[in-house]
Length: 399
Image (cartoon, rainbow, N blue to C red; front, side):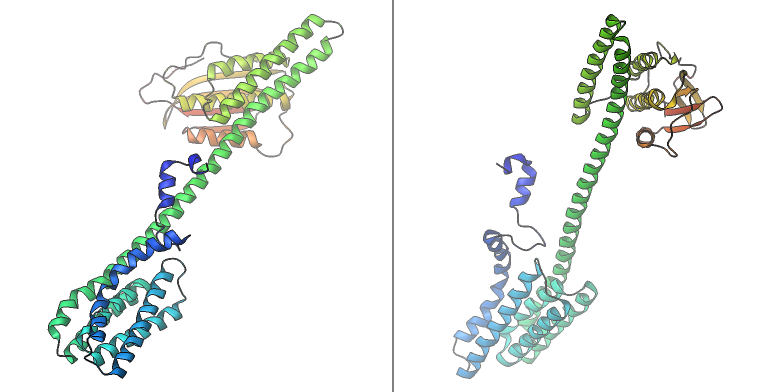
């Protein structure tokens, strides 16, 4: 059931062997083992040499003991390197032991043991830092050539020369690939977290703007209905009807904001601003039929949010008796812009700094390439929001 809730890519990735991470279960351990076991093919010559009967009983026993120790250390280090590697000192000691065993066994038992240097080269490439690996891999190759010369088997040594040298360097490339894969996985997780945080901020801004405006209007009309109820029940009933409409629209807006599909329209917000200001007994000058042709959707939405926040602040905090809304197209040094200006004659809010609404508006406008200016004037408070227009558009008064 849980698997059904995730995407197909996530499920498939979860089933793959995780590169650079320890196995989570026996199945993953077996799959990782499959990648290691084929490399043990070079142990065929030492095993054949020990079972051939060419050595004394003591030499054969020593050879089996040395081979068992060599393979055990190799598998332990390689498996731990896949997920939880040993500390540097332990790894260096293990590689030194492997290097010594390979040299001693090859020098004492003959050329059949030259294949052990392949595993030493693999361990150097997998476990050592890159700079050290670049030196220890050729040193291991040189030791193998020296053992072949000592055993009078230079032909066999030359046959393994490129294998020992290249397999060590290829392991350094595999290590870097694994490290890159792990970094990409972490980066993807970070990007997903940032996207989730951005979505939370978007939702917080939308809910603040939506509910702040709608609840302010509901509160205002509720007060009006309460004052009208004793003497003017019909007018109070009209206010209650308006409250119902506003609350229903607020519910729709919240649902759309949560699903991420809400894109407010500036014309609708201008009409709503006229209603809200009139209900608050504020003399309003609002453009009735603005020209919004050619305005990008992102820019229009940003200005609509700016207008909603500005009108909410006028109604709730300013104590103004008059408010003017202007919508103009202007030519600036940066190109044509659509400018929304909201100015009232009130005293403004009591806050000492920008509130959550203005901060959210600044973020919205920046995403649309616009700017926001807000501050007190001689008359009261003025908010100016600008968004860029496509180049080549006619510039003139839009209201």
